[in-house]
Length: 401
Ligand SMILES: Cc1cc2nc3c(=O)[nH]c(=O)nc-3n(C[C@H](O)[C@H](O)[C@H](O)COP(=O)(O)OP(=O)(O)OC[C@H]3O[C@@H](n4cnc5c(N)ncnc54)[C@H](O)[C@@H]3O)c2cc1C
Image (cartoon, rainbow, N blue to C red; front, side):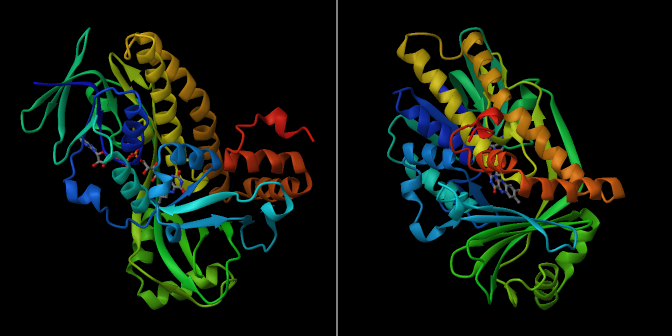
């Protein structure tokens, strides 16, 4: 049986960032991934374009992951417009009128995954096992044993589940999770267009569906349409020409003619929140801890924060000669990440509820909120700091001049 200090289940962006962050400690780390090496080394485009906050940028730079992303794969969000219904009135965020340079950064998910993979190649204390599914986890008092599908066993002081929002390791450890199936889907793709987006992200809360248009380089945008799942089937069945026309029209022809550049990807929308983020010699990070609805673009940003927060606690314990999987440490991590993630999880689900509810009262509240937001700068400052995670500001701080 092979021995490690930490065994991570899942080589997604959260699992690999965590391995990378922990590697500075000199601890021996195993990453176990069910997919084969080739699909992690050269991940295929999956249509997801990830909006990253300033805090994520800082963490990714510290981990030397950011430096592995080709410059041409990074684009900037400088302004954002939020529209409600068919009205042209929008709640506006504009960095050109503030001391913040960008609201956020856009990078394709496959590009982040590739950079995370490349960054760990230089770490001799990380062992990766590809094409290996975790079958069971046996937690003991001194260490845990991870049993792989091929019968191989791995012993580790701590096991970390980073195996997606439908985490099998979470279930194996008996951790329950709240799941909210929205009955809706997100269709994502890239489209080119005649007119410039001016580095503006637009979120249109139309009736029955939402349309997000997120700026990429060279007059290209990432399109995210959320709609009821049966309607998604209709949109997927459209010809490319019909789809081009439909999106351009729904966006009020603000970008002129639009053209689909690749296939449309479909993601059923299910949000998950683990009832706790730890068990005996076990912790959850990334989507396995909190699987967000993508509308507020917090998923991977939160995943990075969970990886960063847990690795810091482990490195401190290791440096002080303490147990890296003590209940005390895991409880501290649990508390910390719940404080950060719970308000965002509930807030996001609340926004989805309000902006997909077409009852007259909900419509009135939405219109009121947008106008109030534009006229009351502290609210705007607060939302801007939530979007950028620029200085982890509190609500109170954002009300100060
Ligand atoms: C349409 C869409 C748009 C999004 N936009 C944004 C955005 O703008 N900003 C943002 O921050 N986030 C966004 N997200 C969320 C973001 O994509 C996720 O939060 C992130 O990819 C999750 O990473 P992860 O490593 O936790 O999980 P995953 O990427 O799901 O990786 C889990 C890994 O575990 C492996 N695995 C699973 N089971 C096992 C097992 N039993 N044994 C071994 N390995 C296993 C899988 O093969 C996989 O490699 C978006 C998501 C969607 C769907």
